Every structure is written in C-alpha cells, then in structure tokens.
Amino acid sequence: MTATGAWVRALITAAVVLAADQLTKQLAIDAVARGTREDFFLFLDLVNVRNTGVAFGALQNGGIIVGVVVALALVALLAFFGRNATRPLAWLPVGLLLGGALGNVIDRIRIGAVIDYLKLPNWPAFNLADVSITVGVILLVIVIERGAREDAAARPA
Image (cartoon, rainbow, N blue to C red):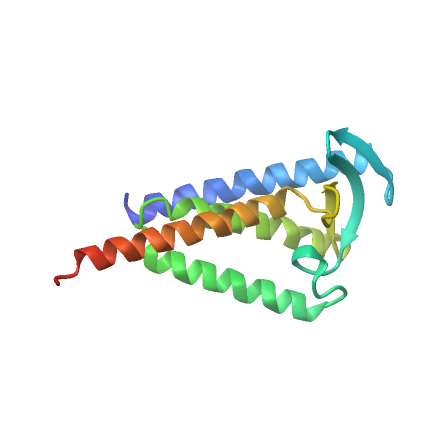
C-alpha cells in the first residue's frame, strides 16, 4: 500500500471512531442522568460521569498537564506513522488511536472533562474512545513487533 493510501485509511478510521464516539456519548447522556447507574448488559452498566484526568482517572484535574501529555502522544503517533505509513496494517491502530484521542479531546474542549458512560465491576468508567485507544495501542505494539521481526529477518546474517 502507498503512504497516501495508508493516510487515507487512517483518517477514515479516525473519522468513523470519532463520529461513533461522539454519538454514543450523546446517547448515554440522553439515557442516563448524570451521576446515576443503569443496568445495561450482564456486568456492564451505563453511567454518566466526567473524567478530568487521563487513562483510568490518572492526573485528575491535571488541566494543562493533561493537554500537554495528549498533544505529545499525538505528535509522537503522527511522527511514527509518517515514517511507517507503508508498514502493513499500520493505518489501523493509528486511525483507532487518533479517532479515540480526538473524541476525548473534543469533550475536554467542549465541557472541560471526558464523558464516560460504560462501567464494569471494579473498573473505572470508560467510553468508546477509550476502547478504541486501548485496542489501538495493542494493535500498534503488534504492528511494531511484526515489523521489527521482518526487518531483522531481511538483514544479512
């Protein structure tokens, strides 16, 4: 795949994730009063809470620090992809990460916190953007590891 094709796929993936994230957050806000919990499916509840920190509530009320951390992570992600866009399937984790991060950034800009609406027992509340980011990180590690193995195999002994 060409680098341009990979960028297009990554951006389409990011746009789909971003749209789905914002839609599901609005549906959750409409369905559940803030601060309450509704049974949804087996061990998964719907909630309506706000997170001013990052993953799992770390850096609560971190303000500018959270913004800097997110900005640096996005710059690093885009720099990686700029150098590795033609790597097989690299577009997928990049699109998932970018879409998820932008979904949460939009919340921070709009209301000053991230809207979380899914809750598992003994686990912090989360949202579709968080799921996308988590899956994106896992897939990115796989893509990087697979690329490193292929690079090592291609080097003369």
